[in-house]
Length: 133
Ligand SMILES: C[S@@+](CC[C@H](N)C(=O)[O-])C[C@H]1O[C@@H](n2cnc3c(N)ncnc32)[C@H](O)[C@@H]1O
Image (cartoon, rainbow, N blue to C red; front, side):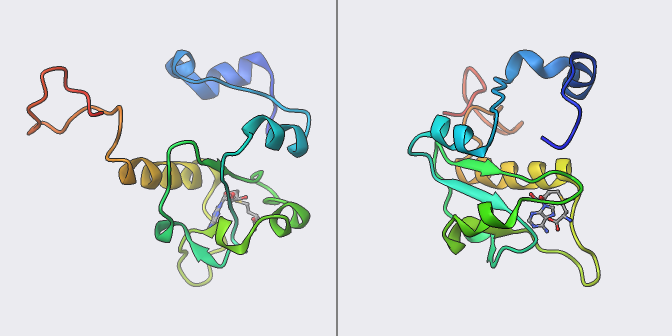
């Protein structure tokens, strides 16, 4: 994960949102990949050659991010098709976003493409339950 995995720190990072997340911890990438089954894996890396917003995301896709200090290892990146190693645009001279910002940008793009499935409708929405499906 790239950060300390103890109850106190995990609780603080999740604040009031723990009940909405399912967290699975794997011993290594191989066991995580096996757990994901047939899911397409998109790795986010400054070394990616494809922009993240040019991908058509599908339900079940997995988005993979590297640790704050060193990013994802080269052997893992090389094991994926180049079309599944994605880059977020950066301004000239700036290396990378921090991990939480990179995750937020990527997840919101995938969610946007799914019409914010499961999210609240806009204030102009007319749904009776206020939920998009
Ligand atoms: C602080 S960055 C790691 C920086 C590391 N020195 C590198 O070059 O990959 C933490 C993680 O956020 C994601 N990330 C940050 N900026 C990114 C970008 N411009 N394109 C793709 N992924 C990015 C990647 O998953 C990265 O491993």
